[in-house]
Amino acid sequence: MTQTLTITRPDDWHLHLRDNELMAAVLPHTAREFARAIVMPNLKPPVTTVALADAYRQRILAALPAGMTFEPLMTLYLTDRTSPDDIVAARASGFVHGVKLYPAGATTNSDSGVTSLDKVMPALEKMAEVGLPLLVHGEVTDHSVDVFDREAVFIDTLLAPLMQKLPTLRVVLEHITTSHAADFVSTGPANLAATVTAHHLLMNRNAMFTGGIRPHHYCLPVLKRETHRQALVRAVTGSSNRFFLGTDSAPHARHTKETSCGCAGMYTAHAALPLYAEVFEQANALDKLEAFASFNGPDFYQLPRNSGTVTLTKQAWQVPDEYPFGANTVVPLRAGESIAWTLA
Ligand SMILES: NC(=O)N[C@@H](CC(=O)O)C(=O)O
Ligand SMILES: [Zn+2]
Ligand SMILES: [Zn+2]
Image (cartoon, rainbow, N blue to C red; front, side):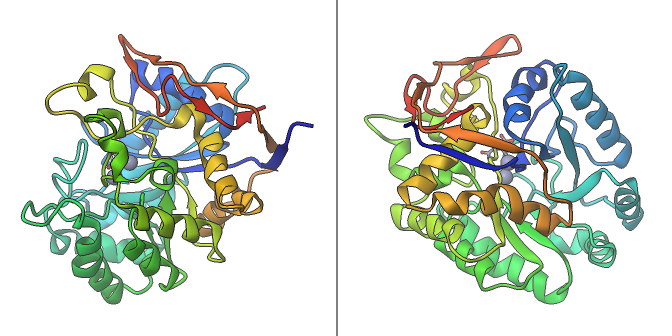
C-alpha cells in the first residue's frame, strides 16, 4: 500500500509572486497547494502603500485560474518614508497582514529598503501599538561582515535591541538559516516567530558547489553549513509552535541566474509541500508537518486555521527541467531530478 499523509490545508507565510505575466505563470503552483500566502512586496516599484497593495491583490485574484481558491495576504514594503498614518491605514484595510523590513541593499529589489532603524522608529512604534506584524529580512548589509555571518550579526546588533525597545512588537524573522536564529526564536517571547524554507531544511552550502558553481542553489540568506541545517530541522520538528512554513519561493528567469552575476532566489512553489515532506520524513517526524504547515502560521497571525485537507502520497515524480515564466523560463528546485512525495 502506498503511504499517504492527509493534513489540514496549509498556507505559505513567505512567497514571491512577482507581477503580471510572471505572476500568472507561477500563481497556480501555489494555489493548488496553499489556501493563503503572505505575498512579499518587493516589486519594482515596491508595494509601499495600501492603495498599491489593494491593486496588487486585485491583479493576483484576477490571474487566478477558474475553479481555484486562494487568498493573498498582502504586505507593505517599509521605507524610510513610511509614516504612522500608513501603518494605521494598513491595519484598517483588513487585507494587509504585515510590513516587510528589507535592510537597503540586502537582497533582490531592496534598493528602497530601510537605511537605518532610527528612520523607521515612528512607523515601528505604531505597528507595535496597532498589532501589525513586522516581517524581517534579517541580514546586515555591511560588506565587511562575512556573508555567512550576516544573519547572526543582524540578530545581535539590530533585532535583539529593537525587541527590547519595542517589547510588544510582533516580529516574524523570515527564512532563518542558522542555529543562532533558531535559538533566538525558540528562547524568545511569544510575539517572535520565524519562517523556514524547504531549501534551507534540505541543503547545506555544499549544494552551491557540487561539481561546479550551482546558480540555482543561490539564494539569500545564503545556504549555511550542515550543523545549521540540522538545527533548523530540530526547530521545525520540535515542540515550539513559533516556527512555520514559508517557502520564500523566489522565481527568476533562467538567464538572470545563469550569468556572471546571478540573482538570488530559488523557485520551489512547484513542489513546496512534497519538499517539506521529505524533510519531515527524513527526521522521522511526519506527524509534526501539519502543525508547521497548517497551524502555527495562522495562530501567530491571529487568523483562522483552514478547513479542508490536502493529501500527499509517497510516490516519486520527476521535476521538469524548467517551467514557462512569461517570455522566458524558470528552473525549479530539483530540475530533472525526482521528489519522493506527490500532492494528490
Ligand atoms: N530569497 C531570495 O534569495 N530572493 C528573494 C528576496 C528575499 O526574500 O530576500 C527574491 O525576491 O528574489
Ligand atoms: Zn529575504
Ligand atoms: Zn523572500
